[in-house]
Image (cartoon, rainbow, N blue to C red; front, side, top):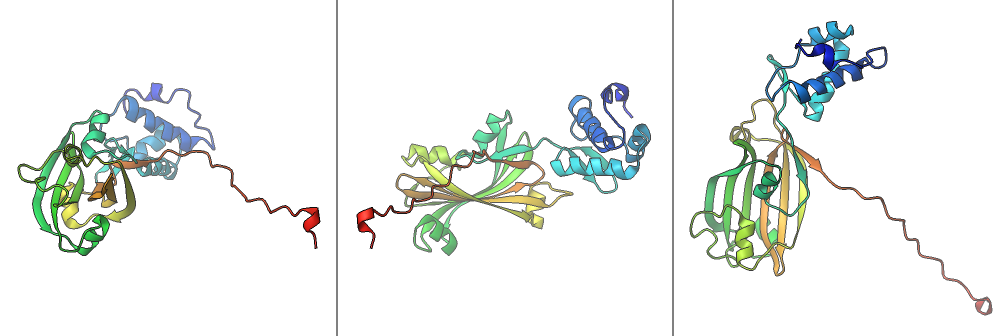
Length: 263
């Protein structure tokens, strides 16, 4: 146990019915005050002895924190403080804008930057004929040096002929704005999946394979301007969605029958 154990557990009620919460709160305090990312937490045996409870109760508390993304369990090695998760907020912004807003340094590694004939599914999303030329950009996106996502995007050549004439733009949204195609709205579909072997290798995912896939259509005033498909590491992202109170259901009133209209 760490030297700060007595202080960290001060005031916690480890009596029956509260032992699980006591262990969970203690571990949360350790993560917040004493441990860094990658540090190991005390063993299940040490925690069980300290709190005077069963290892099963300790394991349940640890399992809950693993599910929340606070801790990371590695088979055969132990349980460690997990990297900080990034909220995936539903906003029409770029990866770079979102990472900088969170105080992180964005970077990219370009895997492909080419002009290709449009596949039927991409053509349907962009409202152009199948086979029409499109700019295709594929890159791995990083934050503070850590691979976070793989992004593929398509832009019709007819909208932005010189998009890939030089080096690929750091921000495709900014490039579209300069061409008078500022993104004004979009639609996004999220699905849960498992990373392929290739994706797991690019994202440096060694122990977990869960990913979140996002497909986004971006529209300018003139119509769809970009289709993007991204694969995000499930261990580094959580979805944040603002919710509002439901509005009253509007029920149409039955038409009132005048007395003189009564048969």
